[in-house]
Length: 144
Image (cartoon, rainbow, N blue to C red; front, side):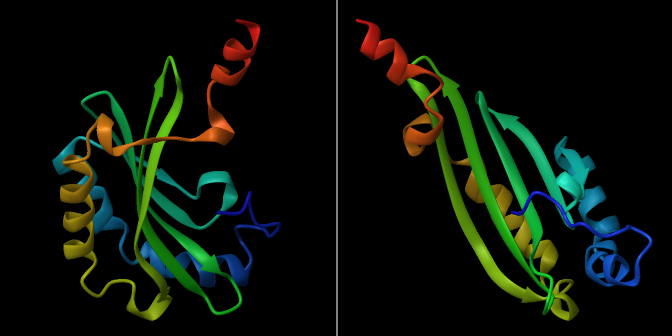
């Protein structure tokens, strides 16, 4: 995901990119309420929706976000992370890529359910150490 679009939220382009997401907002909000999730819209000024929750000490995110503003297409993914003494552990799984905006509403409820059910069975053992974000573990090892 990019670190934002340099366009006004009042522009025609922004409205075009945001419109497919707005079309599923009610469905996303209801899903978030039903499962006790937090909902973030347009993270880092990028057309997206993030559903976030914690399960067994694992922070989990379901994300639908703009992939390509020229076409426009969207990606749907889930990720999980956990900070441990040894570092930052994570997992990411793409569930569907390059979804045309006109098709975003199709089967979206089923996709959210599949994402939730997949992430809910992940455990600490399913996460792997992320060497880019090891929480300072490399520095602690060097000092020994």
